[in-house]
Image (cartoon, rainbow, N blue to C red):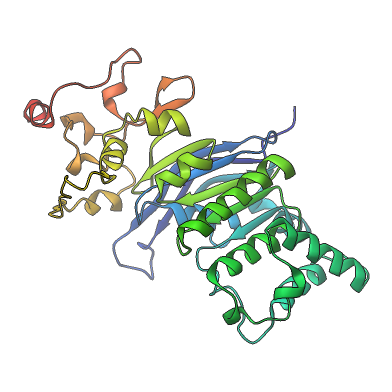
Length: 343
C-alpha cells in the first residue's frame, strides 16, 4: 500500500518568546494532523477566520517556514530531512497559488518570462518548440491563449487572467499537490466560478490534489471533498465537507454558519458585534479550549485542557467536550440556558 500523498502529524508553529524575542508568544498552529491520500485526488479545505493559522499551515507545507515541533511527510518522506536534490523534486510536486496574483509577478518582465523560468529551472524542455508546446498546453488548461498574453506585461492583464496564469504556471510542472491560498478572494464572482471549475477539473482529469485555504465556506462547500475548520491555531472540527457544513457540531462552526446573512431584504443585519478578548489563551500551548470566552456552552473543565477530537460520525470529528461521550446527542436549549448551567 502506497504512503499518503501528504501526512502531517502534530504540526506546531510558535512565534516569539525566544532569547532574542522577548515579546508575547503566539501559538500560530498547534497539534495539527492531516492526511491527504495518494489516490484519488482530493480537494481539502482549510477554513477559519483571519489569524486562525490557515496561511501558517500553507507556509509550512510549502517550506517557507519551519516547524517548531511535529512532522510533515510527502509520499512517506519527512520534508525536513530531505536532501537538496529531494527538496527540488518536492518543490516540483508541491506548487503554490497565492492570494494576490499581481504581487508574484515581476512587473519588468513580460508574462512569458514566468513560464520560461519554470521550464529552465526544472529542465522541462530541450528545444524552444517543446517549450512552446508545454506553455500552450498549460494555458489552454486555464482557458487562456498563448498568442494573446505571453508578450504582455502583468499590469496589462486583468486580475482573473493573472490568477489563471498562476494556476497554469503551477500545472506546467504536473504537480501532485497545489496549495491554493485564498485563490479567488481578489476576483469577481464570474471569474471565481471559473477558477473553482479549473480546480475541480485538475482534480478529476489530471489527478492533482489541492490544499484549499479559505475563509469562504460557500466556495468550500461547492468544490471540496473534506474540510478542516481552525480556530486560533487548533482544529475545531473536521470531516467530509457536506457533513461539517450541513451538520456543524462545534459551537464556533455553528456560529460561522449562523453568521451567513439571510437574503431576505426584510431581515435587518445585526451590525453591533462585541467580542471578548480571547487572545490571551493563544499564548499558551497547554491552555484549555480557546473558544471558551465566546462559547455559550462553556463548562469549568473546558479551561483545564484542550478537548481532543471526538468522532460524531464515520467521517466527522469535533474538538468539544459536549461530545466527550460518543453517544452524546447534540446540545439542546437556548444559549441563555446553557450559559446559566455553565455558571
